[in-house]
Length: 215
Image 1: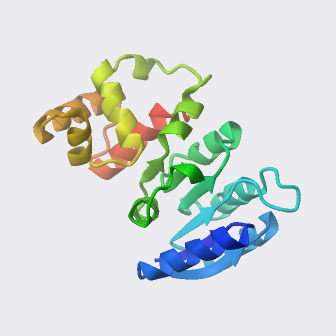
Image 2 (image 1 turned 30 degrees about the horizontal axis):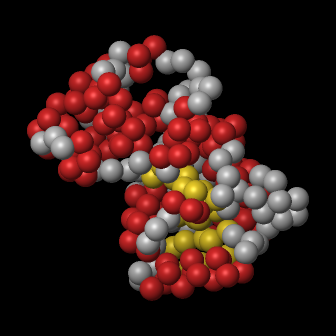
């Protein structure tokens, strides 16, 4: 994969570059400010980008706004936000185009290289990879969705794990359910949410975006 790393802290940025390259991928550009991030994303059109939220010049939300601007120019550009902060408003806006290819992890929640690279690869493939803490923040104060109210508690649990990017097999292991049981729950869930796309991967992304209360 061709990857852009946007992170202003030298040690963290250098560590991510080394980790990514150790897994056989290529970092095509790095950025340390919001404007540099936008330029790098538009000029290199990477397979996926890792972007911090708070970057110079003001250390507010430049990274996330650069990611939004890049997605506006390049619809569906895969972005993995990696930050110490959850910016609810902009995170919802990032998810709102319904295109998938979005991840959002808190730095403290990344425990090993395999987890990080797996999230990058899932986002690059058009899927989602959401930190459970981020999901909880996004759901707090979100708008109501009557379709979500139709889901059972078990279906909500399956959908929450799906939002984290877990496969059906991994969800089954987490909930101590068989693959066939998870399949039945997901089929029922897609029906209740009115998701009729024939592609199962697309249905998963659409279900997650609905769960996160995006339009």
